Length: 169
Length: 197
Image (tube, rainbow over all chains, first blue to last red; front, side, top):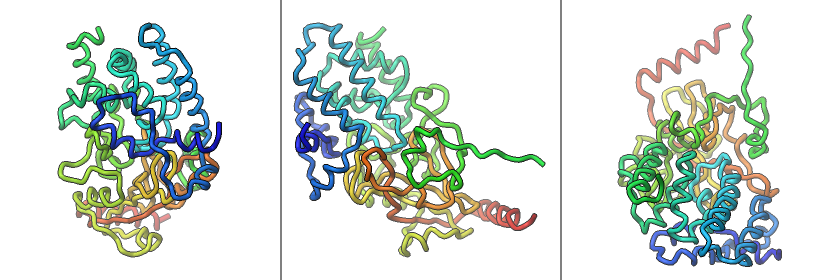
């Protein structure tokens, strides 16, 4: 993988800003080129965790879209979720870091079809799925404003929403 | 005589902080993993510095995480300063090392940012906040992991040079607010306890 391609695939926090009006989820994978003035410096600073990432993006672009086969989609979701969780458990507080991971964005790119998988994962254990869910639910959130940031209550609200909408049992 | 054993971070977590040698810190709490949210509420460093151990604070544009109403919701040092100002803190204009010195009458927070940017954050964005304890040490909650007490601010410094480490950058601003009477008394007690044998 060439350095230029690696840099191209590094998500920036501006991706988050572009998430708000999203209507076509697939564009999320067309990440903006990194706009650091010191690109050559950045090229030497790409972390190991992100060196793994172009493989994800590359493999996804080569694979057969699993839209027609739910089992394939579930397998793909599991693969991406596992990749995301491995990196998301660092010491960071920044949500941007957590939700701009390419595997997370790729999950969002599948659209509403992945909502049941996300909710089932959330049933197993709470995690930072809330931004993905809000985007996939077209900016709807069942979480009360006063519960924003309370992981337990946010999880409960989304699971309740999922049950009402038949996404999960 | 009882001896206390210092608790340290798991090596997988410790390796994120190249300057954090074991003589400089001690683990002070249990972790609050998201996976255990039904039992213990997860909270992050910003919440911890703001005195909240129930919520995850972050000014995300989607409005999903907690951020005080009326405070600018953006990942800039200015927005974080505005947030701490809303809690009664005021900016210290002295340079970091001087401003970070312990003053019993004041509570202090240190805001970290990354100058060059790293995989956690774009250049110049905030990464972390630490709170000064009543004994003059600093306390930091490490994401969903433990909170630690560390002797100085610099031990969490580090830019992302090797590509393997995703640290907090460096302190950019110290803010302080006057302690209440109870806080002052505790500080005074701790000071005396440190002096007496």
